[in-house]
Length: 331
Image 1: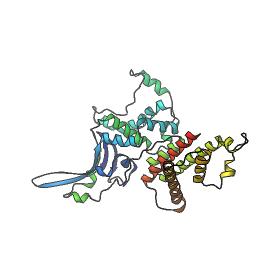
Image 2: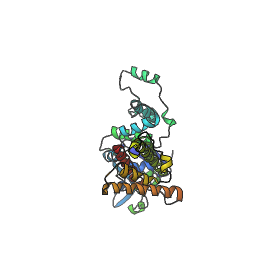
Image 3: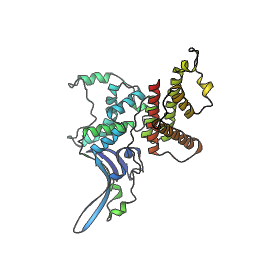
Image 4: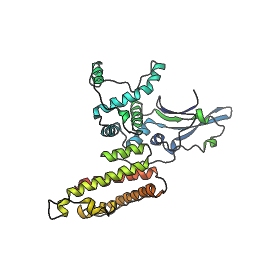
């Protein structure tokens, strides 16, 4: 037993922190709540009131936030399938098998409680399909580095099960207790950053960047981003070798020619010289953002500069993906 902070999606308890509140900018809490979701609630009679602190919003609002970041069930399943090699139709079953145990204790305590991750057969509701599925084996999803992806997939499933008007809350009165004044909770600020920028993730490296993003391992996000950008540029330049050389059979020696050239200069060369892309304010804005992210990444990783910030990482993912899309269109 003990005092807990608990994260609830509707009637489902998802997480609990014993003897503490979640740390500031906890990745999962930051995906769910915004600073404005902090609420001081009160109760009292005869002129005497007590107050407690809670983060609270609706299922509808959290679903909207997940969708802004492209964390729909389909998006999540596609990334999980790509990284683990589990066929897309089997991803849901793998997730359900992993999550079901965490809710079984509620079923044992309350016979009327229905496990939201109960395994079922989509093809055969008679039960015969379950036996057929159990005979098939698929990769163990726990063996892969998925960060918080499984937990986000679990939360997204619960959001879709609940009604839009149901509450999503972080209850902390077991830890913080009740106070005689609302000002006594002024120092409770768990969610300090928020961003509504969209992230669209394609390709393997970008998918891994997104997984690292869910863990707030921002240095690894940047590494995956620029590996992906460099790989895209190399593939594009090799394809365009006949344009660069009169001899169409000659292959561009990327390592020999461009080793002294910075990634950003190579990017501009590819877009404007090889790709004949028209230089305008829109593309320059994106390039400036990617250049800023590249410089920031180098300063933090190599020069011990200030830490990464979530908004900057979101912007970097968004714009690197946009540049990669442009390069693909030029090819």
